[in-house]
Structures are given as structure tokens and as C-alpha cells.
Amino acid sequence: MARELVVVLTDDLDGGKADETVHFSLDSKNYVIDLSAANAKALREALKPFVAKAREDTPRKEAAGRGVKAKGGTAGRGHSASAVRAWARENGYKVSDRGRVQSEILTAYQQAVGS
Image (cartoon, rainbow, N blue to C red; front, side, top):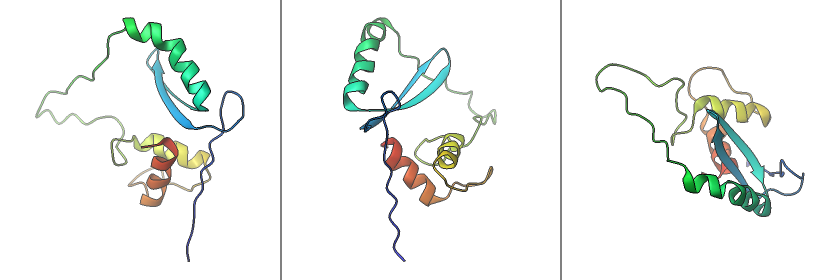
């Protein structure tokens, strides 16, 4: 049986058609918003003067050999398993709290977020 999953993005700002999912962080919180090309451009333009003066924050490397494990696992290609699970639940998938994220769900998530 063939199955086709269609993900339709809706602009979170104005309710129209969204063209992309934009990820950004502020005050140690990560945000994701679906926007049309025009609204994504407006967001980037609004942030441009701040980004121009800001320093890029690169993650610190953990000390080698200490057995320090990052909080939360990854679900392939660097995606946070918890983020994938949250997205899956919001989009009607049944997903367990532990273990590997099903490849079908991971593929749909990657298509939805554009990676």
C-alpha cells in the first residue's frame, strides 16, 4: 500500500501560506516559526542591525574522556530527539517517549523543517 504524507506550512504570523521554517534563539530560548518568504525576510531585516554587531556563539567542546553525555539524544542528522518527538505529536504522529524515533517520522520532520 502506498502512502503519501503532505505537509502544508501555514504562516504563524498572518495565517497565509508559509514558505519556510525559521529557527532562532533569544535569551537562551530556541524558537521555531513557519513564515512566508516576505515575513521571513522582514524578520531577518529586523534582526540585521543586531546580528551585525553580535558575536557568534559557538558551542563549547566537552572535555574528552570524561563520559559527559549531551542532554537529550539526537534523532539523526543532529536533530534533537525531543524536538522531533514534540513536532511529531503536534502533527498527529504517535511516538514513544524513549528509544529511536521511527524513520518515517524523522523523514517527515526533516521535510517539514527543510533539512
